[in-house]
Image 1 (cartoon, rainbow, N blue to C red):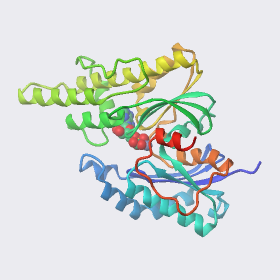
Image 2 (image 1 turned 45 degrees about the vertical axis):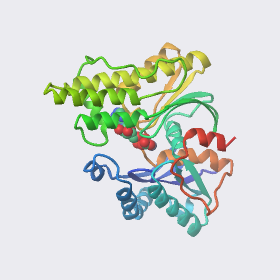
Image 3 (image 1 turned 90 degrees about the horizontal axis):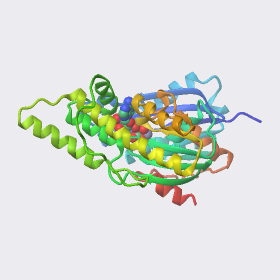
Image 4 (image 1 turned 90 degrees about the vertical axis):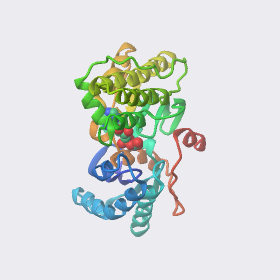
Length: 341
Ligand code: KG4
Ligand code: ZN
């Protein structure tokens, strides 16, 4: 069979990224230009600045990606792009670039949902096996779902309020750590002890998650202690938060593996870069004799290689988009599954 090369574009948040992926798994070229340092000055991503920076950077990223590719742009079989969900102005830069390339080089255009990209990052080092249970934990999502076959999914549960990544970032902010907070919480937690008694997020026996109570408790605790001039033990609080947040994810994965009997598990999304989370979920998988998969840390946070992987099953199914393709800010996995059924 002929090899398929997909040029993929990802601009949903604060990374301008392009990749060329062979056969949905081999990363032939990858460039990620992050705006993190700029947004860190504001304590979080500023949408207007993000879209302007994507506009400035996208052609440079394209040039760089093509330089790393052993073939020519004419050898590419399709152009894939993240069209949803994310920051609208940022997504639009990627979508317009993809349409232009597809038009100029007369290639099919493939629209990829960002969350599907995080899932398919798992196809780079392992072949995804069906069915698999998948947990997606990122700045925008906390979803537990069953992958039945490519693009056939059943959503078991989601967060009913904040995503786990969002809470890592908010807790980091109240502890005066820079953006993005997740990696800084992880570093502080490694130096601390689980000594704070924090409320458990959600004790019900379903697959939904809730993190806003834990977030508010920590914000109030820090404000109260500061007002009373009492020391906040930052490393211990980071550690206690990380343990509490991860425990809830582990508990739900444990429940789902027990109830479904699925023997393959996939962890995905930016928060899956967290080593403590990886270790704890692996323990749950080991307990159930389930094969545990998580992408290499490079492919956990936003990147275009994962978009190239997720585009491959769509390419094989000839699910192409026309030039009316538009960006969508708010398509979560639930609406995406409903749309595709
Ligand atoms: O997937 P991602 O790059 O972007 C979205 O699609 O949202 O995820 C970003 C999120 C941020 O909330 C960030 O703080 C978190 O992933 N994150 C981490 C770690 N690395 C990134 N959270 C905990 N520990 C980490 N090491
Ligand atoms: Zn993401």
